[in-house]
Image (cartoon, rainbow, N blue to C red):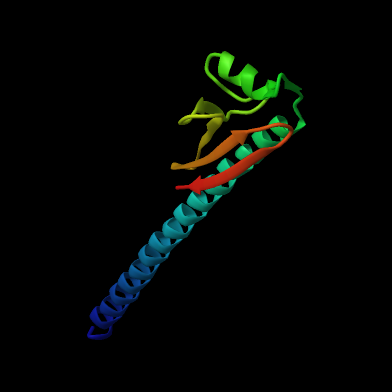
Length: 129
């Protein structure tokens, strides 16, 4: 008769320990997945900016102005052709801001890039958040 209550106590103790361990494992797995999603959106945003840079670099120039930038600024919304990257005038001169916002698995990331249009070249500065 005494062995039955002891067996029940041991079984409940083992079950509680297992449940606690599984709970901690699920929390840790969610943290790792959230970090991976955050990293992925950052790299995806940068990749989209790189694609937009390639489109701009491959473009022709008319009267010293990049045709891809001119076409993107004239479109609504102002997207670089073939990409989800927004472009807008930034400051004086021929400086422009490229911005890419992506989401993946509940995480959001934005990458921005300043670009200066010049004669047959473009200069870039990155900012990632």
